[in-house]
Image (tube, rainbow, N blue to C red; front, top):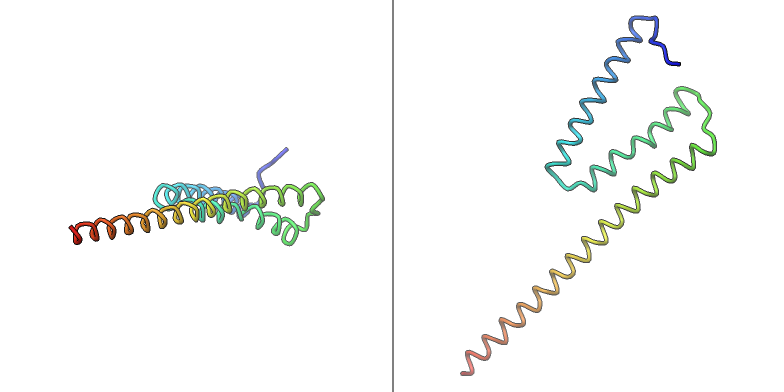
Amino acid sequence: PYTTPHCGSDRLYLLLSGVMMLLSLYLFFRALSRDVTTPAVLMRNTDVVFGYCLQAIWFRESVDVLNIIGLIMISGGVSAVFLHKLLKNVHVSFRTMKYRQLEEECIETTQRQISTA
């Protein structure tokens, strides 16, 4: 079970980390409501990677195979969503470009028909 630290400074750091996490989540969701979500979600999910690095380096905890598999699954899922959104946007922009070309051709043929009449 979890117990609060006995030292006063550790309690302060624990409280400050909770406040900072709350602030970061608030700012994250405010950013999602204002801008394109794909880059923001990708940056947010890098927290998992940094968490594993901190676990291994700072806290000197062992990282087992299940942790690595979970990290790969999370990173792979986020990357798949990003690639899906990217390819979908490329397809939509290509379709829009093709529509504009057809529209310009239609306008040109209409202008030619009017000028010949």
